[in-house]
Image (cartoon, rainbow, N blue to C red; front, side):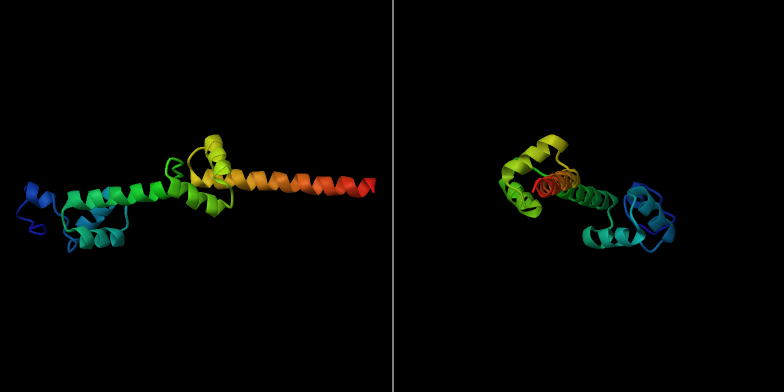
Length: 131
């Protein structure tokens, strides 16, 4: 059992005892999560440290994957094109220029929009001066 202090074998080390505050602190620090997240993970996958570790790895992978644009996937191209309000060709150009990070692509389009707006304003100013 995970909370039996007399048993210190491998079976005890492989389990997370939420009833012991020092274990919650240890495993939270080890997995770099809050105690609340640790408790939620144990509730979802069980007391096995290996299962909890795998659960957190999967969660981190999903979080990292959401921030990346996979040009090879048509549904991703459709989604991000619609989100940034650009054509798929412009999206692919932006990804080629700055990489697959959705934040970098958003910044790229924001910078492009800003320079286009400046050019438009400059053209209007020149036309007013001439006329």
